[in-house]
Image 1: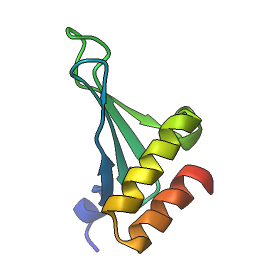
Image 2 (image 1 turned 90 degrees about the vertical axis):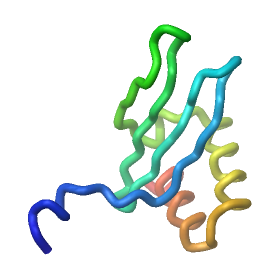
Image 3 (image 1 turned 30 degrees about the horizontal axis):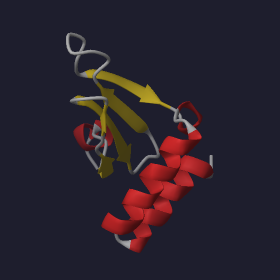
Image 4 (image 1 turned 90 degrees about the horizontal axis):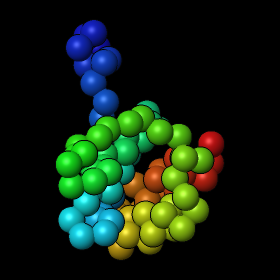
Length: 88
């Protein structure tokens, strides 16, 4: 495997949601277990990206993420997302 491929994260699944009117609140899950939170804080503060840990996601949000994943994802992806959110 070459060095470029080693540095690229492999996406697993994206949870897309909105908070308030039209503010993004998305979570990108990767094969390596990392999570990227992409969100808008206000109308003027948009497209903020932060690498976060599962514990940084409120419990009610983790439950919504899992419920949506269960409906959208193949079982092996659902199990991986569940492991990322609760198994670490």
